[in-house]
Each structure stands twice: as C-alpha cells, then as structure tokens.
Amino acid sequence: MRVVVATGNPGKARELEALLAGLGLELVLQSELGVPPAEETGASFVENALIKARHAARHTGLAALADDSGLAVDALGGAPGVRSARYAGPGADDAANNRKLLEALAGVPPERRTARFHCVIAFVRSADDPVPVLCQGVWEGRILQVPRGSGGFGYDPLFEVPGRGLSAAELDPAEKNRISHRGRALAAFAARLRAGLAPATGCI
Ligand code: ITT
Image 1 (spheres, rainbow, N blue to C red):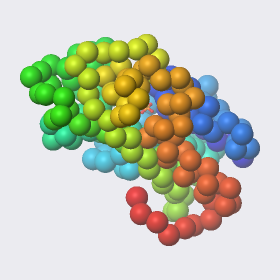
Image 2: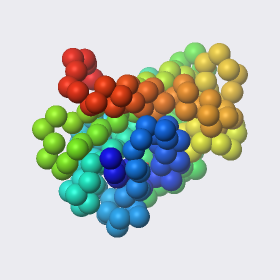
Image 3: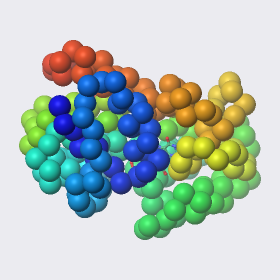
Image 4: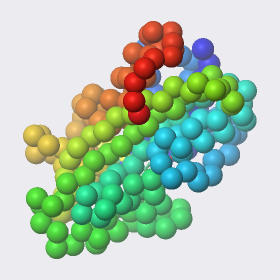
C-alpha cells in the first residue's frame, strides 16, 4: 500500500520512517508530493492528527498517516500541549521553544518538573475514511534545568528519561524509538496493520 506520511517536520519524519520500516508500506513524504501544510485548528492531538491525515489524503488521493504530538508539563497546567511546535510564537524554532520552556519553569524544583510526551497517530485509507485508525503513545519524564545532547529534535534536550540519567537527545535513535511516545503509538499501529486494519475495540 502506498501511504503519504503527513508531516513537514524532518525530525519526526526520520523517526516515522524508521518505525514504519518493514511493515510492507510504500512511504512517500507529503513534501515530495507538494502537499501544503494543514491548518492545525483542533483542540486535541486526536483532532489535529486526523486533520493532517485527511488533508494529505485529499491532496494526493493516497492513504495517509499523520502524527500529532507534543509535550505536557504538569507545573504549566499541561502546556505547551497541542501548541508545542509554536510555543514561542508562529514559526518558532526548537531552540526558541526550549528557551521559553526553561523560562516558564525558572525556580521550579526537579520534583515538580514532571512532564510527558503525547503522540497520536492517525491513519486514513482515503480523505473521507469513516473508520480512521487512531493509536496513541505516552512517554513520562521530567524537564531538565539545562539542555543536554544533540540527537533527536524538539524538546528532546530538555526531556530527562526516567531511569536512564540521560536526556532524550542523548539516547541512541533506536533506543528512543523503542521507548518513546511515537515508538509506542507506532507499535500499536503495527499490530493493527498486521491484523489487516480490522476494526477493534479499544480506547483512545
Ligand atoms: P507536522 O505537524 O508537520 O507533523 P509539527 O512539528 O508542527 O510537524 P506537531 O504539531 O505534532 O508537529 O508538533 C509537535 C511538536 O512537539 C514538535 O514540533 C516538537 O516541538 C514536540 N515534539 C513532538 N515529539 C517530540 C519528540 O519526540 N521529541 C521532542 N519534541 C517532540
């Protein structure tokens, strides 16, 4: 099956391609097909993932897979959440978002810096697919006081991985993919794919 990967984020695309390898899908990035970015107007990761998947399917006529993800920090009432990509303003880069997060958490002690990454994967067979496949993954951690490491993308340098004494940006990419929010969501999707994408009972 030919599937358009509905993301414009190169760090995310790299991880999605690694995680989807070997599943028998022929992947093509939406940028290669000239799909413009979708407007992420949803209030939740689920809504935004579906918006992006349907948008890419509509533009290409292909099945589409999208990822909507973000970081929820307890001491900030769940922010930046669905606004993670543009936390420091429209078009903000990772460095600006990380700086803003550190400023927002200034003076907050380590035990109150708990956070988690969320990832929702939406897969649609066509733009108006009435039974999209939705899978989610969560990754618990804590926000560091200073950035560490150069791997990954986004908030990885500030995300302390429990039990590892490392930031997510210090993990080997394969290890991050095994334990991350995205890795967990994609493992659930792979299981559904192996079951022929048959509808199944479950919560998201
Ligand atoms: P697309 O919508 O084109 O896929 P995006 O970057 O705008 O790209 P999102 O709206 O889903 O994607 O925002 C996700 C943001 O959450 C991302 O830009 C990072 O700042 C953060 N994020 C998500 N997963 C992450 C990860 O594995 N490591 C670090 N930061 C992550």
